[in-house]
Image (cartoon, rainbow, N blue to C red; front, side, top):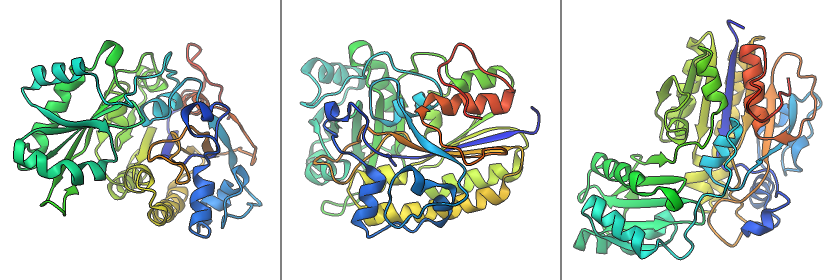
Length: 384
């Protein structure tokens, strides 16, 4: 299959409607794209609309395409609603059990282990919004040197530190140490470094975030591809989420702009392999803050980028647009929502078909496109 390329782009947190068990996660009725569109009076997404986004969900402002690509929704096979398990599921890794969460903060033994491993003391230790936590605890952190430890409804341990207390590199190294502490029953999905700067009342998070994910519990389609000698290029936080496994080359991008630039450049330069991109802003900048205008604006930028990628794609290219979970602004919390992910797939012979299935169908289709056959030991069925 020399000369073929696949491009998988994850529109982070762009959920497409609740799952049957969403209520068990506190997410009954979640429908991220539908509710964002309603809140802003309609989304202006001509490219995504032409591909068939409006055929997946009734999204205000997005019409019904008369010539769609393959379109539908995909769902996880395992538990969870975060970026780690969402990206894993797309590539055929199904978590056997839910990753641990800490709605009341981390227990004393975890905090004690973190202090022993790092030599640092911590404050907060509660579920918190990332921007609110530095506003509330930032001055205390500066005065005492205690690092801000917090979590969310998702399986994460987050450490925020001002650049005058720890440099970005020092904070990232500390979080790497904590990754080694959070094992066994406390093996959270991610330990996340959250550097910030500025003065009290005007604190600002920097782009020095880094995620330290737990090891995937099983082999992925990325492993299968690289094992077959096919290059895999990870753009954005994808490499971190797979702990570098099955990745040939990482292209760092803390924001959508650089991630889009990397993806466009790789489409111009590569003649073979997989480009696996995460576009983070709809989640990190806008979704968790319920900033629906910002969310809609980020989608417009993505829509324009997709138009360029379609022009760069040829008969030997498979372009898949999807998501990892939702972050519905209509919920009474600020965290991810358990939802279907939208699926738009452009490739020769798609026929405008509708396809619903597990998220692993994405990885199975990429593998079939690039190798010509299945990976029998992995879940999912190719929709090609």
